[in-house]
Length: 493
Ligand code: BES
Ligand code: ZN
Ligand code: ZN
Image (cartoon, rainbow, N blue to C red; front, side, top):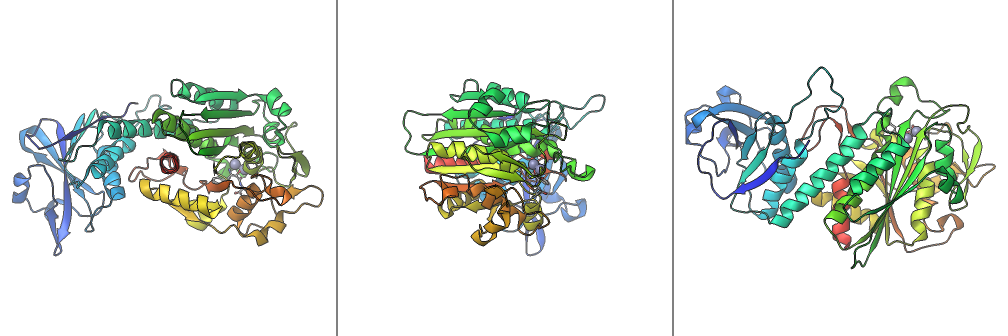
C-alpha cells in the first residue's frame, strides 16, 4: 500500500467529477454554519444543514452532492479554535472516510505552513488498512491517490518529504506489528528490519544465538530458550558526520508472548503478536531519522525472542545473568519483557549515550492506570521532560508515573541480585517494571551515578487499537510514538 500523493493548491478552481470536497462545519449561536474554507460553498447555503444530519461534532461526516458530479463531505470541526493536532486528526479522519475516492480536496483553513503540513500528514497517516491477510473477502480498499489541501500556506518540499518518510515508517511499524506470530518470529523480524533499513544509511547487525552467548546476554537467551525459533539481537546504527548528541533506543521485541511456563490464560494471550511493537517502533524511528538526515547519532537495540512454554523453556525460580552481570531470579516467566530489556539497556549504557529511551509493551497494568490513549513514561526527569515535549509537538499522549524508589525492595530476591516480579502483588505493576529496568542503566545496580538520561515508555495499552479507527489511529497496530521518537531526535540534534 502506498500513501497518496500530497498536494497544496493556492486556490479552489472548479469542481471535478468523482472528487470529494471536504467542507468544515462548526456552530455559531447554536446554529450550524460552514467554517472558513477556500472551497466554493454557495450551493450549500440553500440547504438546511441540520435537517440532512450534518453535525459540528469533531470528525463527523455527511456527504451531499456537489456541482459537476462531485461530492461535498461536510466534516464537523467542533467549536473551539483548531490546534495542529486537531487539524492532523481531521485530515486523517477525512482521508480515511473518503478513501474510496481517488481524489479528495480538503478545505480546512490553515494559517501557516505547519498547519497545512499537519492536515497532509494526517491524511498520509489516516489512510492505512491492514488487508494482507484477507483471502476471499475484501478488506477496506484504499483507492486514494491524491489529497489536495486548499491553502495559500504551502509546505516546502523538505516538509513534504518529511511527511512521506514519517508515514512510510509509521506504516512499516504497523505492518510488522499486525503480522501473526506464525509469520513473524525472531529471525524474520530481524531480517524484515534489515531489509527496511537498506539504503537509509543505517547499518544493521544481527546477533544470533552464538553471539548472544558470547556477549553474555542471559536475559534474551533465557526468554528465547523455550522456542524452536531462537532469539536475536539487532543493532542499528546511524552515525551522521556532524552529531553533538548520542541517542540510544532500546525496544522490546517479543514476537509472541504466551507467558512461557507461567502461561497466560487464553483470553490474555490474544493479541500477543503485538508484543514486539517496541522493537518495531525504535527500528522504524531510527530509519526515519536517518532518511531525514537528522544531525544526531542514534544506536538502536532490538531485543527479540519468542516466549514459549516447552521442555526447554526457562522455569520459575531459574536464575539468569544479564549483560551487566546482575543475576535475576525469574519468578514469573510472563514478565519477560524486562528480562530482554535488561540486556538491551546494559548494552546501550556501555557506550555512555546522552539519552536512552526504551519502548516496550511491558505491563497490562498501564492500561488500568492510564487507559488506551496514554503511554506511561518514567525515568530521569530531564529525559521524561524531553519525551513529553516531543510527544506534545506531534500530538501523541504520554503521562509520567512516579518511579518511587521505596517500591524497589519489593523485587529483592532471596537468592539472586533481583527478582523479575513481586509474586502476588499487582499494585503499581508499571512502576515496578520501571524500577527493574532502572537497574540496568549505567552502573546504577552498583549504586553508582551516571550522566545518562533515561526514560522508559510503557506502550502496552496504546500499541493496538481494538476499537474503531479515530484520528490518525487505525484499527489494529497503531504505530504510535514513532513520531515522538523522531521529534525527540529533532529536538536533541
Ligand atoms: N506482554 C505483556 C504485557 C501486556 C499485557 C501487554 C497486556 C499488552 C496487554 C507482558 O510481558 C506481561 O505479561 N506482563 C505481565 C507482568 C506481570 C507478570 C508482572 C502483566 O502485565 O501481567
Ligand atoms: Zn509476558
Ligand atoms: Zn510481553
